[in-house]
Image 1 (cartoon, rainbow, N blue to C red):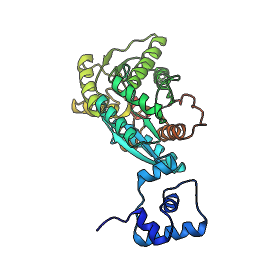
Image 2: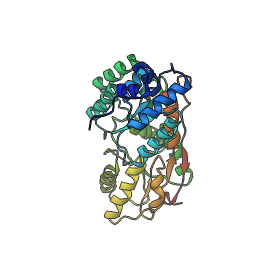
Image 3: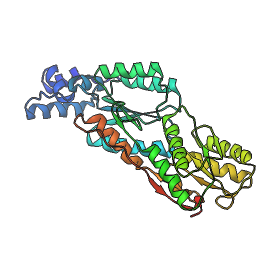
Image 4: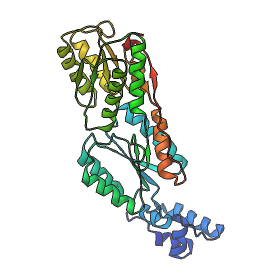
Length: 333
């Protein structure tokens, strides 16, 4: 069965093609309401489905926002996505989601696809890299030259439109609080050093340790996910030769969850034998035992701030969003 065309709707309503287009494609030039109602009734009767590309041309907007995350199964990213979607609805926009894993080529492909679909804005929720991919940067620059807006979450002030996050300050505050509780031995599960988020949090840990006159007993680099935490904790425990009472500072919650599982597989109990902390306070932490000491970030707020910045040209760039230290059982609370 052939699809109903706009010209067919125009004939059925007894109006010109241009008039039918103005009514159904969202043009700012609208005919009289009785004519518009006749066109809408004809479209409904015939089962006409508007052409999104034609609507975009009429409105000079596709009504779409592209959101790039590293792993939608990670509650950190799904919480941010929820915030973006919530705010986007206030602007009558729909969100297109690309989950790329930490892959530069996949990020480039996602941005290229969003640009070809002429999304009104692109939000990058994954951690930026110390050495940006030149192909990705070129694609983003071309997109912005054509009128698109790009917002990053966790970028540094002065690096374009960004929602800055207090990663280093939050990490430093966590260590300072733990030291005040009498903990003196720390190891760091560092994550990939090429990711700015991981590097900033490690810098916050080491800065606070230095201020307290301490040094980490070990720094273990691994993947920025649960499996990375599992592997890093086991390698760290081997390096520490089973030294009890050490606090393992993981640079995010999913790594911390993996670290606890990795220690448990070795017969090491948390917090009886070792302490573990995370960062982000992802929503699913309430389902884990022992409850995880972490730095709480308002993840949905990050997403909302990013969407507001992307879709409202008058929106001022926010100040860095701070984290709040939450002490729970995994650090001996």
